[in-house]
Length: 409
Image (cartoon, rainbow, N blue to C red):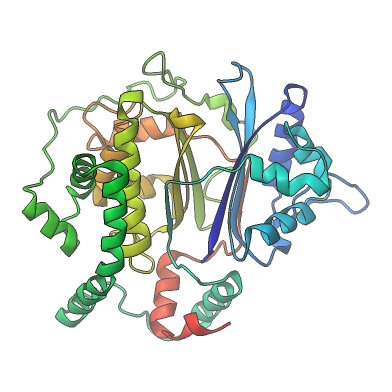
């Protein structure tokens, strides 16, 4: 999987917004360039020619801080190698950089593209990669070998005593480095706020031994819902309405012309919510705890039991005003959210209870939670996967059959 990720958010010039939207939709609906007519030159980003990019998306987001009709361009990639080489490759893949990147404020030409990217970069607060260190070349070869194999699937979900003991031992071996990270969070966020964040995230993670132990030691549990009735709106055809004057939602008209979901085995989720100012510091602590789990305690292909995520990032943007989620995952949107709600319910509450519009009962109200997500999901104008048929579970299966694969170049 990729070793690095890039998030860029740049304002779009007002006179270029609709033209850029049309160009990106055209690229997104022909991301492999199959319908590019010979001799007809049109702006394109040739992602399939990349040897390092795993996933990429381009999304036009509303930019309410600049005005009600303003938009900005979000670029998100997961890639191998260095930042500088990645940026050079991005500009080389663009057939007409001035037509696309030239629509963004601050872009001043091909030669200055690295500086444009640097000025508009956003650092994530939490970043999970399902298979750290596997390059694009390795994953493509691994996926091919798995597809061609006639051997029965490996036992991915082994629950034997030996397998359980091995997982516990692996976690224990990581504890020294993990402890240093915990000390860092305690210093940055304070012991009380860190403890509260860990309790909120861990409350429904008893299937993980270290979360179970933490919950027993801190007398932590997840409360039942206050009501069994959903707060989801009955009229699912109506456009989304802000929950408060501070809330910001995505209109259904923004989905017109963009690539549809479920075209390949994977989908992407791009979510932007407005953070309640009083909840910002606690949200920062929660994301640091999640990042600790993602980097230090997650097994290959599994984020505390979720085995459909290729990569996921959370970033606090706009000076703490908004929270951005960008995820690349297997299967349908409905199944993905159902798995989230089943396996990391307390984590969902810990993250998004800080945002306006989050259901009063929390993610336990699955119908209302899905409505909240859809109303804050920005449609991707361009979504690219370098291995559209590879699922996380298939790659886990292949690695179990060929455990020495990660050492191959």
